[in-house]
Image (cartoon, rainbow, N blue to C red; front, side, top):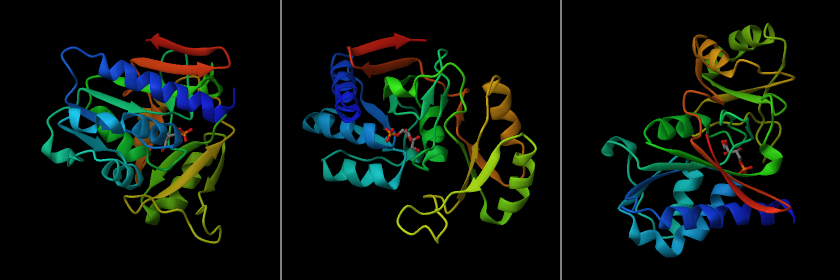
Length: 230
Ligand code: 5RP
């Protein structure tokens, strides 16, 4: 089965899981990325069953509005029944590395509002140790050089993310931040590293989701879909 088919399969399974909830979920948190896009499309026929959704990016917001969902402002919502998002890597404890799409800060905020985090991905994202995928750090542009120096001491190679549309331009996040990607890390203590990175002046957010880890993973492989609870 092709990776896109595997993503579509988990998206469908996540929709089935949500629709089975009793009492029904009312307000959902929605992540960002290609797997989430398929999830939004699969959930679209049931859009009006929900009071609303809180989105983690401008890209997801546009798609949700197009598909007929009511998109709520995070400030108008006390808590979310569930947050659904993809991941770039997930370890056997449900700790994730995220931010490949650059939406890590809003993803972490919306995830922190939810009672339950369901991660949806294909099995290529399952790892034993996080760090093969470059770890994204969103920074205030002014601090980019200073933060790079700090991050280089961790032993990885740091690069400033460039726009996918025009590689001569810097990638700018929905929060007007820049992203530093650290490759070559072997993250054996994700909880501690998440806290350490948050202490660096100029860092807005890092892509380790240990404090806001997944409680459930819906994952697909060549042999089908599996649900794992952490
Ligand atoms: C975006 C993310 C995504 O969840 C992550 O990049 C996975 O994306 P995809 O479903 O396209 O593989 O963290 O910031």
